[in-house]
Amino acid sequence: MFSQLHRRIYHRCPELYRHKPQLPSVPGISLVVLVCTSVELLGKSRDELRALCAGLGEPAYRGDQLYHALYSKRILDFAKITNLPAAFRERLASQARVTLPEIKQRFVSTDGSIRYLFALPASEDKLSARLASVEAVFMPSEGRQTICISTQAGCAVDCQFCLTAQLGLIRNLTAGEILAQVLIPLEENKDHLAPQSNIVLMGQGEPLLNFDNVMVAVRIILDPEAIAISPKHVTLSTSGIIPGIERLAEESARPKLAVSLNASSDAQRDALMPINKKYSLGALIKACQKYPLRNWEHLTFEYVLLGGGNDSQDDARRVARLLAPLKSVKVNLIPWNPGELPYREPSNESVEAFRRILAEKNIPAFVRYSRGRDVMAACGQLALKQDNDSPLNILL
Ligand code: SF4
Image (cartoon, rainbow, N blue to C red; front, side, top):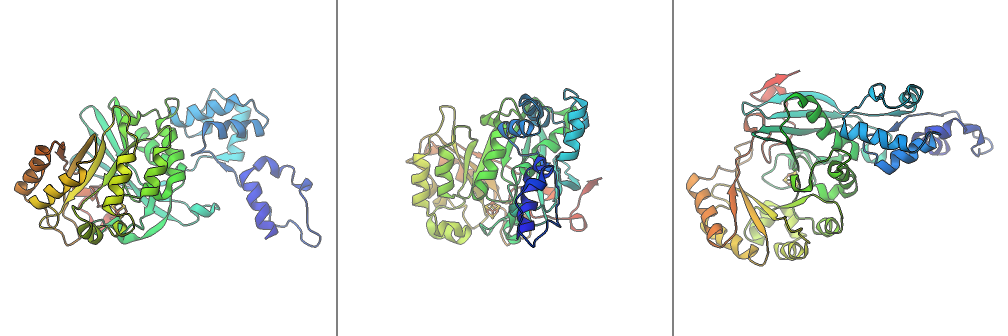
């Protein structure tokens, strides 16, 4: 126990390690295991980096320089942060680290999307103690690129139409692991980036069940002095975790909110998304009514259309009634992507009829065809499909 405690202290504060003889000791127990692991910087806020620099005997503004270099310039190698003094860079290299996930594979779709399969290391941190793999998808298009990122490895929510659900929850991602999924694709594709980047938290995991780490990452994504993506272009998608929606409403810097609806009645949603038994449609709509929208903002509802399952005209009418109490909503209709699960693609006619019924009730509805279908990067398909069983071009 004692050595574990000290190991943890040194892990968090390498500077303290230098002064280890001053730490209290317990008679009869010697400090045999003294591991000086370095401090992880990726995921640290500006204030944390300032405090860390001050703790290392440097002016606190060095923390601002680090913050800018890591998140705005995407310089992830200390040796290349040339506005820091060489001696400090060397000290950082010995006492701090930036851990990037290993890119196990890149799957390139015929539509230009790149699906990244990342291996995440285990760490001493209890929250990230398990090895895991996650995916992110980079989707270029005219004038913009969209990066879909994961917030958990696997997912506990168990939506029946989602391949990720089959993994179960492996673990939460740290803020640094979430940020790396943005920084790596941006940096790798920097020579042909479009002016606008969109980030969607719609990969593996339920973001609101990893709230604290997600919000640390989101604040850095939104900060104009860090990754600098406007809140208009960052969307967090939830299966309807009401306490998380209520917490998000209190955040001063927050992304747009999208709610994964996918059903027109409680019975249907209970069967498709068992989380509905805990947070029913009625309670979810009430939470959405209270959610404070900014004057430019819509609340988005996503509706995966499952052929013969939830895509009838009666379903469309029920959805219109459900959403009627809400202001400023829009619906994204996502025709089911054929995969390994026992659902059918909806017909073009049912998709169009569904859209028209919503539009007639003054609910804007848009049909969204998922990108990256051929590399299993489309909605509900992120589940670690690997090289042997995917018809892919693999870039190494
Ligand atoms: Fe989890 Fe989202 Fe899949 Fe539902 S759809 S199981 S919330 S990853």
